[in-house]
Length: 506
Image 1 (tube, one colour):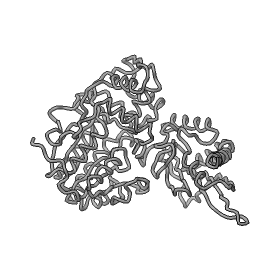
Image 2 (tube, one colour):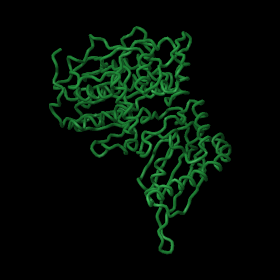
Image 3 (spheres, helix red, strand yellow):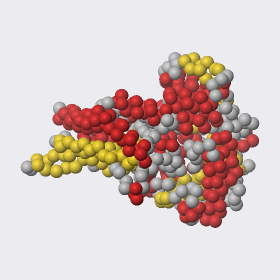
Image 4 (cartoon, helix red, strand yellow):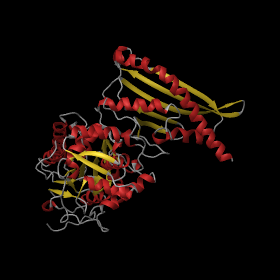
């Protein structure tokens, strides 16, 4: 196939990015904007992306991939549409859901007059492939069932700061100097750097003419997962890992173990591990080189990709994380509060303090809560709650934070999600732990004067909306722990801000 010039021939052409709140989608938007494309994003909730640096530079279409009308509306006037949607956390029938979503998207794209669909899937060339990889391949087939040309790019393990695959690799290697692993740890894989994935995706958006086909994208090296772990250990300055292969550790047990040892929850680890039972190696007959050349500086070697991802993590420059995207029907989000007609009950734990502390440092201390910074006291109880959450299939505390110092709307924060943020004024967190109801934690700073003296009120509210009798009993069961947690949290938060004030004045 003759090379098709990947330089945008019409920089103003409109591009739709689905999954813009996810790991790849969030980064792709920035890449496309840097190439002067007009970008529209389709998201379920526009508030989830309101903290992104590019929010004022894109059009926003709010809709659900299962709703034909909203999908068609989002696609109207679009030249190229990126399909970056996954439904792997939606239960055992996720493959049927993904297929239906893809068919819906293909039909809507055809009716809206879209010229090109670009889809990022997974390499599936082995005879033995998992349900996850088969679903990814079937999604590509469903998208291509319409009349709109589809470029299906298939990638293996993506290495980049914040990716689920990278976090799984990093924490397994760092925390386990000796590990027993299934024999699939010796299977071959062809990882690729997120930088190179974005190159191929954004280049495809600028092709002169629409193209149909399946193309494998992989890095320059083929190696085993065990080799990657040893490489990671060496780059991190760790001793060589002892890897003992056993034939009895099933993918299901492996995912449970990964859910315990790493920040990646079992529900997400399961499809990642199942993918490793196959050899994920690019097929030379499906090479993308004839359509899009490699980046001018060449593809990153595996060790270079690991080094780059580690440096981004160390320097707190992680642009997006695997935890940025949420599934609306994940187990910890299924619980609804009692309906309004039932006389909805709201439980609240309210605390406040009047202080002279500077507003700037109060806000810094609020914004730094959680993750490795801790929860300002009673961290053991937070840790215990996280363990309980993970045992019941929740996310637990190990998701941590994207950055130790700053937050943005949509960020995951341990088992919370930043629902609303007004810099210097308020922070509202929504609980994504497993609960028989819904819960929020909110901080506010208010300025006022007393006898001409400027003061500040800092308030802390834990709010809970129960579901059914179990929800009400849950609140009363945990209330004794609230007495140990919440007063200390606010006191130590103010102390932290006062220490900042003191350090600045001295």
